[in-house]
Image 1: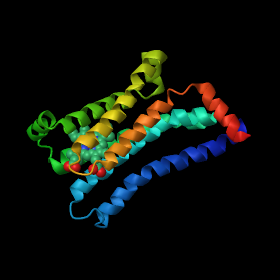
Image 2 (image 1 turned 135 degrees about the horizontal axis):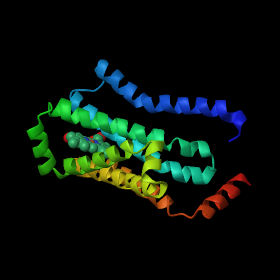
Image 3 (image 1 turned 180 degrees about the vertical axis):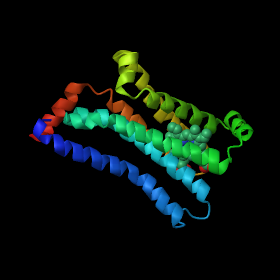
Image 4 (image 1 turned 135 degrees about the vertical axis):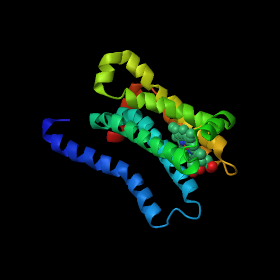
Length: 207
Ligand code: HEM
């Protein structure tokens, strides 16, 4: 993008930042207006879990979207979107630890060992923590670009584990987690499409 478009790009990034905060604001609104229903703790865990997964999917969509459009601004939003996925994962985890388990660590430990869906969630959370801690430019320099890229491919695993965690956790209707998992699989499959095919598609759409 040219220098003349720099202010426009900045405004767009700010708008995206505010949009990404909207689900958190929505949660505060629901919590303070009684909008979380008869089981507010459960509703909070579900709300934050869903948004974690949605942000992980947004992260996975960025590279294919960039390949389709070649707008480099899109690629530069990847870090912010990844950190937002982590932000919602932390809220999700804190809702479970604080509101559901009252920070009763032996009980949490038992849950992690005995309930596979919690174990899987924990592994996904551990991966996201690792990625958030190494998301800075200085981390790229320290680790080296190649190794950093390999490490950050773990986000694919985190998204799949998040979907699996949802699937195993639901008690009845699996439509929603299966839909999430199918979308995640589709987004991962898009990465296998060679760049020249995206270029050809763009040319065809522009014609
Ligand atoms: C990347 C990490 C994670 C993702 C993407 C994720 C996502 C989700 C999703 C989508 C749901 C279902 C929401 C719904 O039913 O509408 C959920 C439920 C839940 N998650 Fe997670 N989760 C993650 C990590 C964790 C961790 C680390 C814990 C706790 C240690 C946890 C505990 C729970 C609990 C207790 C539920 C509610 C299950 C129920 O009673 O219905 N999650 N999560």
